[in-house]
Image 1 (spheres, one colour):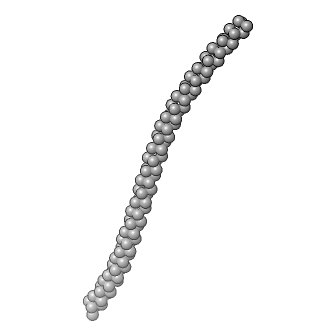
Image 2: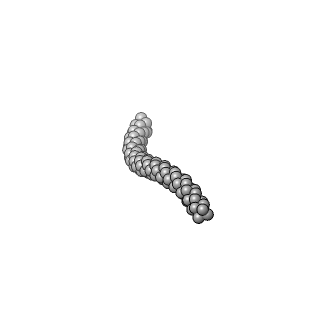
Length: 113
């Protein structure tokens, strides 16, 4: 009878251990599911960050190209402006020479008169 009682107690303990094991397995499954969800969220966030970084890189390249174009345009405009000013200066010198020549003619005519 005593042996049967010990056997019954051992079986009861076995049932309790199996129940604990079942609870632990359930917790483990939940933890694994949470971990999988967190890993998915991290992957999505990493993709978002990567996409943002790529978009910023493209914007930077575009801005650098615009800046280079603006510099080239400004340099071209400056050279054209300088050329134009040099032409204007040449014309002004020519007009000045003509005015001086006319002035000398008037002075000669005045001296002769």
